[in-house]
Length: 85
Image (cartoon, rainbow, N blue to C red):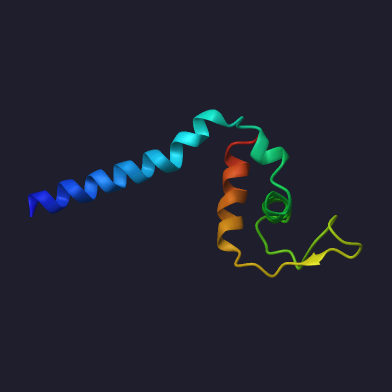
């Protein structure tokens, strides 16, 4: 039983390192400036006081309909509000 726990912990640690190591080499300002449409979704949600906007402006003449699962964008909007750039 202990052996399985050690292997599981090692796999989780290795996966975390593989996922997070590139963040040490990326300019932290880039995702906010070059996040494109997904950051715009989050900014629109935050601008509308966390209510789901029907359309996202600026990408087409009338705006594009919001048709994505919203939970990641709400999380991102909360992070953007908590840690403004």
